[in-house]
Length: 420
Image 1 (spheres, rainbow, N blue to C red):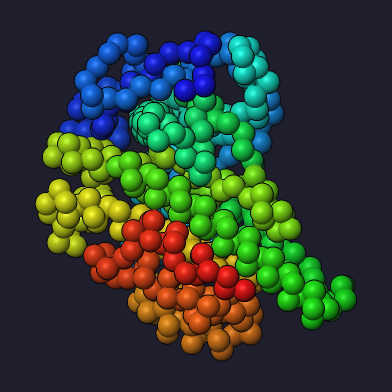
Image 2 (cartoon, helix red, strand yellow):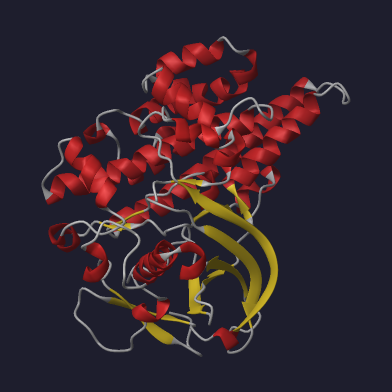
């Protein structure tokens, strides 16, 4: 690892501590803090170590740049409960869609930099989890789980994956807040790109501006197509790396993909990176045999409902579950950046795919063809003799056993062939 001074070794077990995995509720008596995960002892081969900066004095904190939260909804029920309607559709583009049990956690993001040592001046983004008094035990558990996942993935002998956000260190404040420091690889997300692009389309088509030149309109479509394909392929490469190293993401969405640029003309320099590993699940066989942890209980409950009982079957279900979330991300990227602002959002798209057409993607296509406002999205997915629809249907296959693995998605002809 490149971080040497000051440093400490974060020792990561293949699951949360047993005191956490035996109880289903977030509200536990024992509080897992970052210090719980710090150790310089040599332990068994099932543990990993990563040299990370852990002294608060090693960092300088800048301005607050944003915040986001975790909502108590999932896409699996088809959004039929009344509670789902309490949130505006616009919120879903910015917030993670993941069942977090009781309560909610508000994450703050700050700019900063490393203040001392050989990497002085390196820009960082601080992800701040509130203390127990503000958010309960769940915030501490999420911070510890995210730290655990990053430290494990960054300790691989294969090197660090360029499509995963890099954790540089972390510390706990006197008020109990957990601060994780990540390398600053960009402040924009895929959700920000989609929002900015849809607003740009709206402005270009407004009465206040001249109609698009047909040639320029086609060139803009090609640039956007290339950008979206590179964005999604990079995200899938990151997910494939996680799966190959026995980790699920379990919170994949447009806000969990960080971009170093949202300028379509700079697509050749685009490097998407996955973040938000707070709900990551260990799918190594040793972990599966130990039984569910706090963050995997709901996943394995759904696995059992789908007929996946053995460790091998549950592992396959978990990977397929991530692929389903990635399929919803693909649908989001296929529609929102190609439509005017307000025409399509996450919640509307989920209802269209899951509730209205029961995951029949080609039936969804026929519906979209009848709406002029969605024709650019249809045109995008129609590229390569409808290769986009083919990929979307495979990822959203109702039978989890028939969904492709992440590596197959990243190498699908829609993402690798010259569909333009």
